[in-house]
Image (cartoon, rainbow over all chains, first blue to last red; front, side):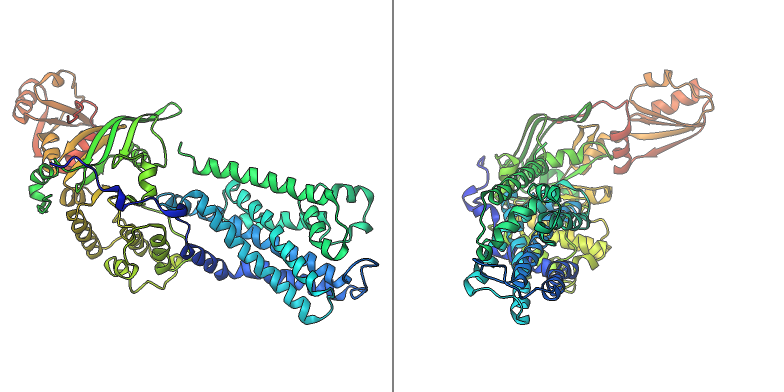
Length: 265
Length: 321
């Protein structure tokens, strides 16, 4: 008579919490399949750039002495940032739909660790963010108005993309916080507000003093300042502090809701 | 381990043959309270490898709460749940347990095949995807979006997801809801074949005939406790006896309770139903000591046993030790 239980050596825990490339590939394919997401996160920022970055009167005017680009390039960077944030928020917030459909519960019955799931979600969101940045930059290059040195194209694109991680975390936070399937409708509205407040859609130096002061406390301001540093050269610590504080807040919020969602009660 | 006995009429032997098999699931004094509600009120249960166990009980009996604890989705308020000697969430991490839920648990924007592929990628010891798709009978719909599948097709997909993970313990919640008769039969044939290889299966169902036909063992839960545990034949015997039905206007049933073997009394208007082991004694009493008339005696099936064991307040609690 055997009293031993089954041989657990044939059943090791999943490596890396179950993280794997098949999962990542299928997640990205899902996102690409969603036409509405593609429209809003890739075509919309491109369209915004074509409208704002090409038609504004002094679009080929230099940003001034000591800088490395023109107004069109400046606006292109802003629109790429807006697109990347929209894309990563959208990618992160898909956890909301999955919770509503019982998918995250189903995944908890597999060896996939909740952390590996969140990392996959963030990577998927970042992939979509990268597509958004590339789309805007390609249009910027093709239409020929945006002007800055090659290294600045690369440096700004990279900063925009890495910076948009903050909004992947924001999307995850909101996806875990809000119980609806249509969370993104609400989130795109908040992003428009952040973009106006943070100076992506308007020139803050032309606004009232109180507006400029308020802007410094909003989540996209710091990021927007930082991504333009390669061409403006005007780095200020305050923008880095702003970005890090908001990243910290979003991360704390996401961890809090995530823990709550995956807790064994 | 011999688990070749699959004829449902021989389930007592089957239960005996797994009696020495290693333990798959062990619940010891498990309780679960939500605020003031006691959803589970002390469950002790040992299930051995290779057993097919039906988990039966009315809604709100504590079935889902118990299954959630077995799956590591929630923690017992007191007592312990162990799956293959491990804490449930550790067993899940090793891919030892898989579950098919009745609803939800699918994303609409993946195809059927992709859903199985994705599930397979999460388990270190997954089975081959094409083979599983064939077994589950979803080849024809493999490239269809999950959102476009019917309820029955989605249920077959859930089954494929459970199969592909090749678990040691498979938990099914109302697994055949929405399946047609042929699919249901194919489904159970496949479950039985795997159980013979040593897989343990626990399923919750409302189809009593399904529990009767496919389970080695039936665990009846009522109000957070196990009220019966045994083979279908044993459970039927527990709730056995007969039902005596009479017409008795303004029935005064208190005295009737003292009659030997009376298990329950159910007054429905002028009709009185008496569940009893000794129906002759009840009939004699009713016809000689009361104004009741129009008497009928009925034998009970598993369904009546189920009703008697899970809804009858006068029933003593049966717990197998």
